[in-house]
Length: 379
Image 1 (cartoon, rainbow, N blue to C red):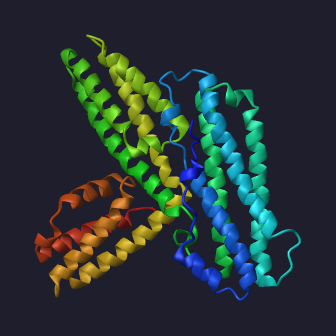
Image 2: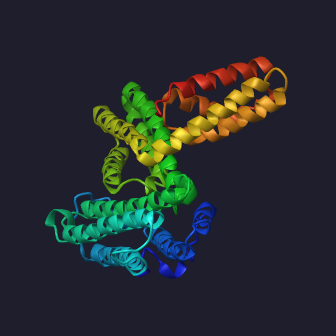
Image 3: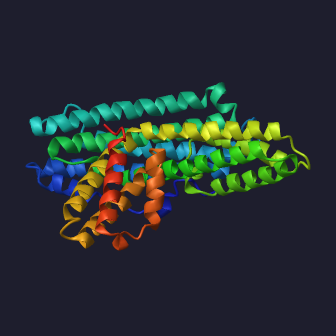
């Protein structure tokens, strides 16, 4: 069986241009060289610890205990996780043994590395303890959730290691220096957008089920099954947390059961759709992830600047205003899922022929977009 991390296919880790600039500008080339080894090892570890695609480990039977086949599949994942993390820790120990000589420009970053190393090493110990905990290993989904959580925590700690130490040496954002940051943000944005659309679908389906005649209940159940199956093929589903997937799998099974009944109860189907709708709406908690909070602030500010530029050009250069508005709308798509009214605007914006709008239409569209952005709580 091929290990999840697939080391043979992992390309050599490379650092971002900004991180390379920071290292090259350091007055102590020897120190920068040692730090670069740590950053390369961190980038490699983050890549290897990329989030698991749990689809291959899932089962529609939500209360099943881990069997031998699951342990055979998960053992390499757990082993590789420990090996990948220890690989980074070994590089830090080799390059920055305690105590480390040097001035203030080197001692502060080294202190961050040492603190991060301690936290990451503690995580290895906690992983071992979790794998010996009956409450974790006695349930398939709990085990998957714990492995997923631990790997995500390691990635977060490693990301902080790079950002916090590099920030002491030169001005930088997380996007500029943290390995894998763009992919992590993209995954979170995708989950938010697709689950927001699923929420709209479920809300509409719930209304149809409540209004359905008895002969239409099975058809609605079948339609819902199709909609949930489509969601199960999306990138958002693959990126859900294990415990969230568990709820989805359980409710999909219940929908499937009702879909094959010749005369399913409307009350039963309403109950299932209501539970699904409530659960999916709760997935909006993804907006509280620090990763998305930082991302949304940056996009919000960027859109605001473009819209101000668009407004200033409406009278003198309508074509330029249209381009600035289109840029703002394109950038704003990554905010999809933040707010219902903004989502509706962004859906319309995808089809809007901005270049064909009159100056008055441009102005009103810009004002509407600015108002929606002003209503977002991103600070």
